Image (cartoon, rainbow, N blue to C red; front, side):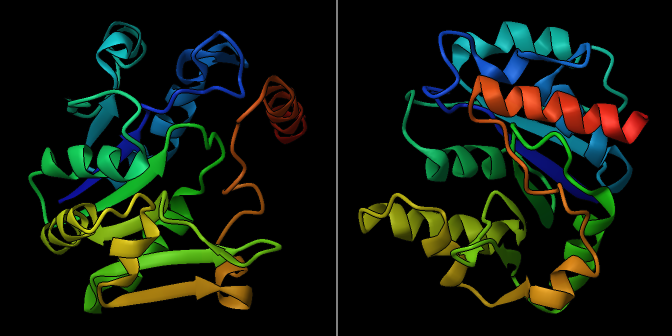
Length: 208
């Protein structure tokens, strides 16, 4: 059993007045693209969100083919670390992939690779980009150890998800090992209206 945890509770301040979670991308809400992409590699979906997002997300996921659970923030704008904690707390399984809600091209084959890699570890996490950044919002975790590490990090005043992730036994995918398994757009995320337009163009090229 594997759970997908979508972290949707961010404020979307760079996107404008509209909540990007349910913003339309090629006729479907942005978050639905992410959920549909990971359907082949999970057994159920947990959605972390704000109370004000539940109505939109319930409608968006009403015909989703897997069980969906909502894990609402205890307080809004508490940051992604607490969003991950809320999502993992609702995941009644050993393993979970945690994803930001704004990555419409997440590669399911790559997520399966992360699930495969985590078998002898507690975290499987990618690292890439100009700054060689870790990607804790596209990573697979053993739920119980990660929850313990998150609680320890929160008590210590940490806010970034990478701190508890790297406090555990982790395996990192980077460089050639990463790109041998991941699509080039898997980490593309929509932060602005311009990013949404770029995503539309990418989809157009894929379908063309």
